[in-house]
View 1 (cartoon, rainbow, N blue to C red):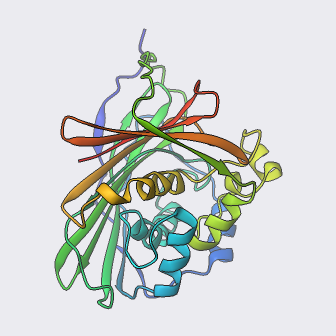
View 2: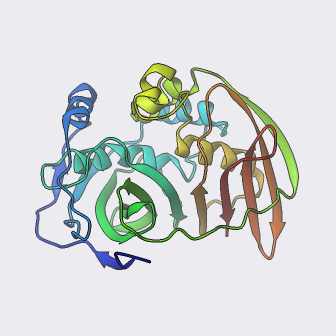
Length: 293
């Protein structure tokens, strides 16, 4: 019997936005994240903390590095790139004293990105991050981070990520149907140091991605690939069918991709959208499922 109803809520307003004027010092942010504990109690509403960073310039060298590690052509801004530019805002919210959840241990469940407009990469970008909805599930508290980007007052990009804070809720677990892989396939071999190389570009130095020893501290047998790298690599494989703008990419992260490993990518066009998924080499475990529409 359920002990707590799986209710949804919006974040409670109150705090002024956190303003970034430059890229935060990564070692300091990581140190704060490592020592920050949480005060969240089941049933609490999350505060509507937001952060903003204005007049961001696109470093073409950084963009080229990102595109190389994810498999994109070097001259374009992929749908996932601005997520890495927004990542410092996410971290500033996570380490904020007003945010009641621990900074470490949040599990990325899903990500939605909307590419609204193309823009001149020489223009300055404004990015905002804000804690949005949350709900209780059988696994814990699922909460969302809303990201938006604008150029000269025009909305060009948005994203919503759902994270899981593991805690006991007493809610019954629902069974899920496992779908079979369909479509054309590719096989990718992922190197042991992929997590460290992507961290150097994305700024996401979560220990679970860096090596087996640090990953084991958080319950993983090996280092795991970043979810947003996996999403980006899938999009790079579909680059030829993705329009310049006016589309949305949804992804659910299902099982971790261990490093090193071999994975199988599948893609198929169905009912006006491109569906894709990522499996382990045995075909038994589905790491990721997504669609472009």
